[in-house]
Image (cartoon, rainbow, N blue to C red):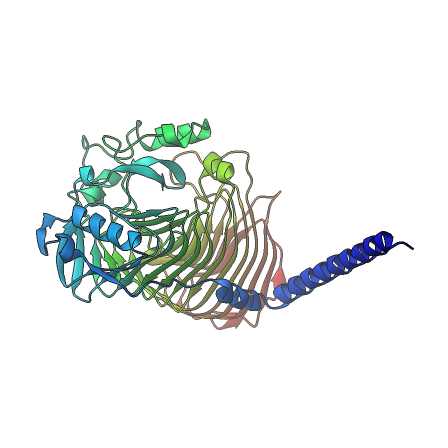
Length: 480
């Protein structure tokens, strides 16, 4: 045998061995994940890189900022951030005091840090927010800049124990929602006018290029508060956020995000606390959410736009958080068309007469999407209004929401859950005959008080293991 033939033979043999090992490892990881998905969560946590910044500080006061709560400091923030990033990065310091500003646009390697008594007051004048590429309720567009915005940035942070105050109320941003409880009256323009939200959704359905979906002035679609768009390696730590115009923490098409110790207290319309969308490898931990909408709502695009982008949200971890008021504690949907998988929720407290549900998945046949592998454990739930677990394939809030994209919901597990008052149902789940909700497990769940054990329609393989509802052990396994 010649040397060349020997080398070729050895190369082929080596390649076969490598392929065998890869297949073997893949099978082993799959088996481990199925046997104990929480080990998979641990691997995800270990894989997420942390931010690191140069030991340099750029005080916004040195760039002309005035802490009187009245002077517009947009230019001072921009100058400080530019100097920071151009000199290798570091900390942009916001000292104690009140600083009024328009949009803040972050750059790579910049840590926007607030002193304990620092408060950034965001202008309520829409003209202070330039038009940028962003997203609104799961549909991409050109709209008002988020109050804090970073696009295509790496290694970026917002830290410190100061406060971000959107200053939204029923005299400005909230009135655009069209809700009478937020100041709207007949004759006042809002997002619900036919030329606004409906036009955007129609553009997406017709696949109009995003660059041509120009909104902003006269269209009344409120800006997000903090948006990381196509960013990687992000930290948001310890800040308090109040009075948001719209969605509050919005990682969009982003990876490797840590949100730690943040307090959100904002009861306006659509004031979701945290909305990861088309995003992966997200940790939300040690946070408190007291909101006018969902505390955490995992998104993946709306209808045709979600299917166009086709990036699922996955590997999302919620740990040691407190949920007070809100439509739901941890929610998936309704903007969900690209799908969601690998969601882990553990060691959280949820309790308020104004908290509607603990865990909720909402979609419909216009949204579609595959939602699977959602694992929840170690929750202490005081009071929820409607139910502990709600899985709904018929979510309908804006007129007709039916189409040809039948959703999939499967593999939902709740373990070690204690509930004092579960509201109307312990579990409410509704699927399609051709696409039932599949594989629900409640293990070591105790619900002390609830009106009805469950309301189930087209549910396949629901398992109750050592589960007690209203002091009675529930039958172990059923199809509905």
